[in-house]
Length: 183
Image 1 (cartoon, one colour):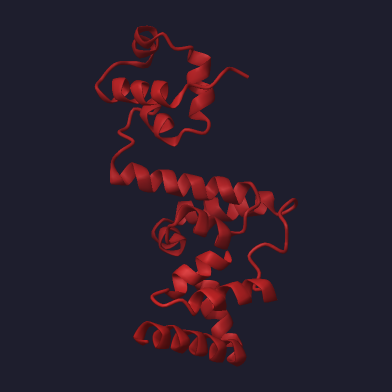
Image 2: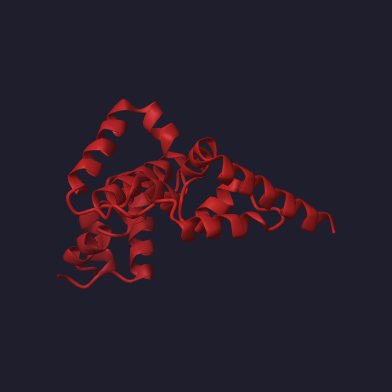
């Protein structure tokens, strides 16, 4: 495998591409190895977007990159809940907005199903304890506490609906956080 570009080389190449240079011209001018460019693009999202001829610093490209990252994580066997935490996006909205993307998510998950761990993203006693401990911290939201515990807020709300004891524990933790904030 070819040596990857340095961060500085990648950023300089992105700037050249954004200002209209074609790839061959930029690689020659910057004295870069083309194999290193492609090797770097495998893990450098901004470079990959620039190589595709688009500006990697626009909101639409950042959103497109996050969707791509989510699909990659699903294909690697990460459960959707953990992949959503990793990319920091609202995947349910993305999937609802784009049926083709939703199908791609299902396909990536199914492709990884044979080697994905079944225990990831579950509300184990340890996860529940981490969530409730974090929720007791003043100013902490359910989303933040869920992320700290390694699950999505959707998983928390589903558990709260199914489990009255957990719902009571959540209320108690939130009351404790409010009490500590007012002390």
